[in-house]
Image (cartoon, rainbow, N blue to C red; front, side, top):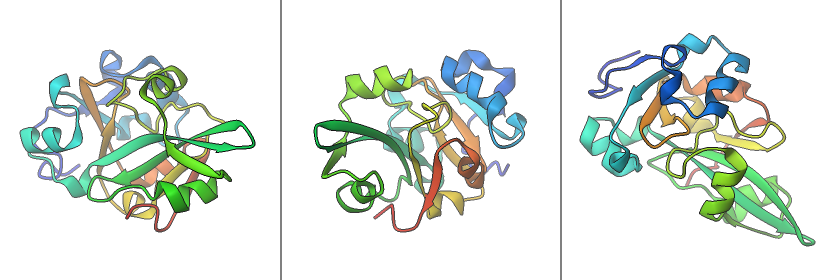
Length: 181
């Protein structure tokens, strides 16, 4: 992995530091689509977990940082949850692309307490690795086309770095063109 793209953080293979991973993330690494050693982890100040602050503090470009958000869609009184991954330079098209993909009449970002309870991850650290396997995982093509992308670790006190294409092998993953605006 390129040191310039990954900023000033001390990256190590994620399997060597399970203490920096949410339990669901650590378990999912072994079941992931590729070599778990391709996934790197680095500790960060949890106060700097939000993307803009993180990138500024650690010298990471926004165009290699990806955000994973939980979306709740409703149809006929049923709530459907999905995860959406877009680069930090874009925002997820929740009202059009995501809403149609999850077949919902209405869609919005899931409330924090629901997102935390359903993922087993900390808010601000939610990552596509370790999500419930029956959820749709919508990944923007720009994320997949990024050779090295940084995402949450399930905890606010660390980040993961991995090949963007690695995400398409996760359970429920769907490559979506035009997901990020």
